[in-house]
Length: 251
Image (cartoon, rainbow, N blue to C red; front, side):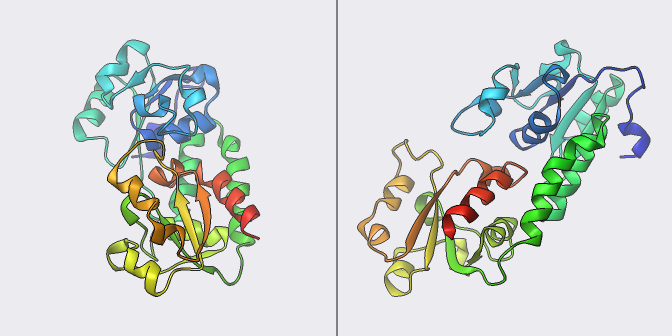
């Protein structure tokens, strides 16, 4: 998108809506309360978003620009491909439509923070988050502890993924696993030193959650650290406080 498309009129008050959970994070963290006119319905769900208490002040939508038109936004945020129809409709309605990049690196998270702050008219709003991210990167331990992220069903992350890069900032080195999945055999034969165990929807009964309660998981000998699973869905800026917390308890 051309830079000029991101500039609101000098006298225009920001009225912003986001259309998916991952875009919601950036809007809720960087916009002033009066500037937000809508978020996705998932942002309002305590099981999905760390920011649900903020999000519940605003109407929820299911990812359609048509659902937020009545709120008269002049900025609409999407992520990872809002769809050609969304961009065309936004242009026809003279809205600033910003499709954030689905982050594959820490630099992508940084760029998204900068872009949203700039779109809202004040690049300085991103500085506290950029400084915290830069501090984590600058002070990352030289050698990461052997570890594995694990959520329901043994699902994990690949060593080169963004999830693994966040783990590295917390002081852990993601172990390579076949299919990015930790198996019970892995835990019997050579368990990681540390398991970063996601509590995502941990209060809901499912086969995936039962897996985490298997005796071999409990008696693996690995140190188990619980992590809030909600930020791991988007791997965006809400990971920053979670990584700070994990680093603090991992020492």
